[in-house]
Length: 151
Image (cartoon, rainbow, N blue to C red; front, top):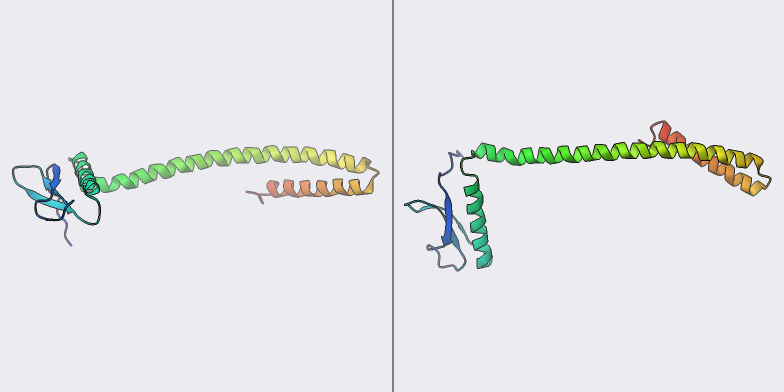
């Protein structure tokens, strides 16, 4: 299919004169001649048909003077800007989370030291085993986030 340049001119809409169907609207070129462009018909209410015709005319008229190729690129460029914005937000979140992981690592190292001290000075075997278990879990968490396992 070969596509030529679009019809020039502003669009207007009006209730359809061609159809006996209630609620249909014609979309035409605004000029001395009635260049028929489209018609809204279908299962929608009359007010929805009119609103759709109005919107199509408004969009067409707002784009007057902008080439079709340029219009098609607007959505691509908009999506690229949105992706760049989302990527920047993700980088900020990543940096914040990395800082929090570093802070947690430091807290775990400090906790490990205190639990080791408590375990070594504790005479209650059950409590001592609990401290030793906590030290092992803290050591595993530190190792996970130090060696890249948590990245």
